[in-house]
Length: 233
Image 1: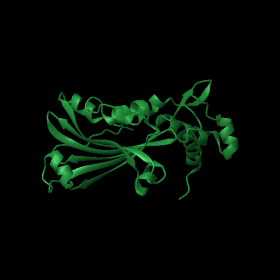
Image 2: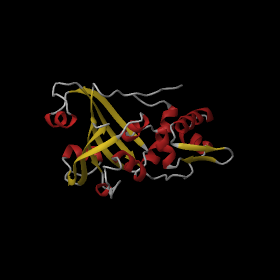
Image 3: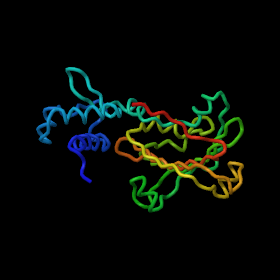
Image 4: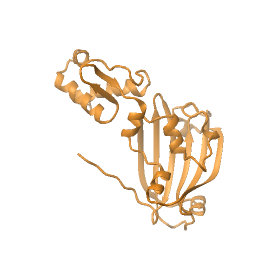
C-alpha cells in the first residue's frame, strides 16, 4: 500500500537521518524546498515535520528552521528500559551472571539481521540478570563491532549491555516483538525454573545512525515479570 503524501515526505527525511547522511545538528530542507520537491502544500509538509518532531528525530527552532536531532535527544524519545534501572527503581538489588562473552562469526541469518556479510565478526554475550538474587531475565545478545568496538571490554557485572550501547551507539531506531514461549533447557537451568514454565520473550533490534547496533533475545519467567508501559495522547 502506497504511503500518504505526508508519509512520503516523512519517509524521505527519516531515510537520510537513519543512513547517517544527515548528521545530528544538520539542517533539514526548508518547508518551501520540501513543498517544491514533492509538489505538496505547506500543511502536508508541516504535518510530516510535526510527527518527526514528536518522534524525536528532528528539532524545530522558531525563525531558524528544522534540524536533525542530537542523538541523545533521539534516545530519550525512544523509551528502552534497562533491566538494572527497573530493578533499582523497585528498591531492589540487581546483579548479573556472565555466561558468555566472545567474538564469533555470524551465521547467514544473523548477518542479515545485523546488515553484515555472512561470516563477519560479531560480538556475542549471554547474561542472566537477577533481582535480589532471583533470576528474572536471560539475555542472549549479538552486537555489531562497528557500532560498539569496545563492547567485549566492558565489565558486565557492573554495567549492563543496554547501558553501554546507549552510551556509545545512541538509538535512532528500534524494533521489537514479544511472544509467549517455553524456555530451552539451558534457559530453564539458569533462570531456575521448570522447562514447562511459560515465559515471555522479547526480540529487539536496535539501529544507531548507519549501523544496526545489536540484536537481542530476552527471556523472562512469566511468573516473575510483566511488561509495563504508558501511552498518552
